[in-house]
Amino acid sequence: MELVAVSVLVVPSYAFVLVQNDFATSLAPSAVDSGVTASNVGQNDLPNMGSVGGQLSIPAQDITATTAGSTTDYITFTVTPSAGLLNLQSLTLDIGRVFTGTYTAGYAVFSSVDSFIAAIGSGSLTGASGVLTGVSLDLSGPSYQSLADVTFRIGLSDGNNGANSSIRLDNLTLNGSVVVPEPHEYAVLAGLGLLGFAVRRRNRRA
Image (cartoon, rainbow, N blue to C red):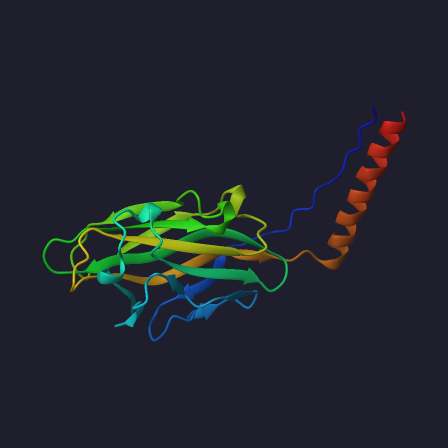
């Protein structure tokens, strides 16, 4: 059997802000890199979600689930490269709650990479009322590289459906890069594919 050595092209990738939502006035992204398009932040079963005081506010009365990992109450957004592929680095956000009395809540983050099955990260919201805590989720692993698009869901849970309570989010940011091979690199990749086919065909004949 004849072995053929080939060189694998590696396109340099540098992380930067792909999309950011500061929720200052709306649910539309506040910053979008020129290499991607991004949806507004949407919702499922959270009809009263909106921008309040420069933060995303989700009234606790809308949140029926007590476990964020299995909830259908979530916010969501999608990012798609204009050309090429996405290489992700991290997802960061600030999250907390506004409440009076006793109040328990939580969150869990999922993505379309595994059809929203396993949580990328989760936690309980235990801070004081009005105090948001920074969360950073690592997306530098192989599963989050070379993506044609990606959708995230942030599931929310509420322990007591408080009438004057809400979960708040701010500074929702996706960091990464867009990799677009040069035209000659596409040609080389295509050539490598044809070479591999020819080698396999010759080996079968031998």
